[in-house]
Length: 113
Length: 118
Image 1 (cartoon, each protein chain N blue to C red):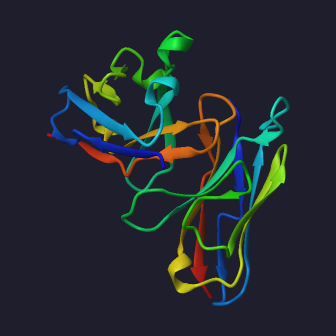
Image 2: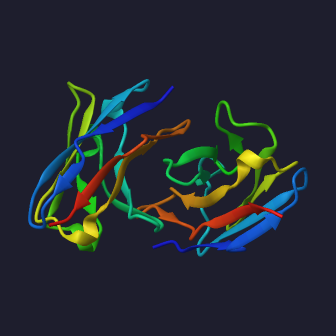
């Protein structure tokens, strides 16, 4: 199984500042035949279902604000939230869908400082 | 746009059964491999299993804790995915999501809650 490790476990960021979450996979999730990274990012607010933010490591889901961006390739990935808003308080998860079982990071809790 | 809508969750006693459904639209359901993922209250996400498309053989695959108790099936004529959950345990209490990864995007439902309690 591919292990997914996120860092940090939590972070507090001032409104309007940048939040950066890292995700590392134990094996590459880059599929060489199509040059795509099978890596997604999700947001989950308390009591709500998962919301897909980013897939293919850097493609923003329709309707997701452009302050959310994803980067990285192979085994190291980053979710960046520029100009943090109050509504961005949530837990964020990374996920690999390169192979089954799909595996997820442990989650990063983002709060307002 | 990929749309997935789960249903069938509820409160069930230990040892009981449920059949969860996932209605799909916005993509060619029959071509895609479909997955179930669960999230216990206050916990992380756990992939449960997958069913391949019929054209790829239709095989299923499960994690060890649910093998023999859970069964994934599909009805391509109804664009619907199923998860039959039997011999339920309290530790199966979770939100159950269906999900797919197509060649162009990912799709997730909003989940259906299964609570196992006496």
